[in-house]
Length: 66
Image (cartoon, rainbow, N blue to C red):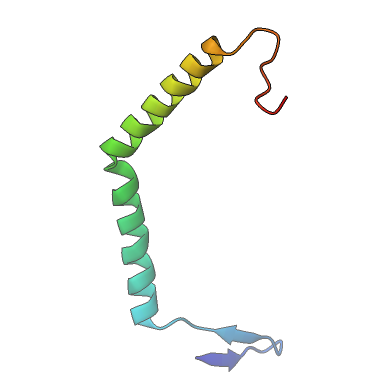
């Protein structure tokens, strides 16, 4: 839906369905972010592996590309 304001600028109104959908999707993203125990475990494990790899690399070359 569009309508012209008194200044001549077009104003767009969102439908109630779109607003409802946007709210529900935001709630779903928040819920998913809060309930990811496996993701945090994977992140912790990856950080541990990177720390171990850093300890086992030769002291003279820390850059994996050289």
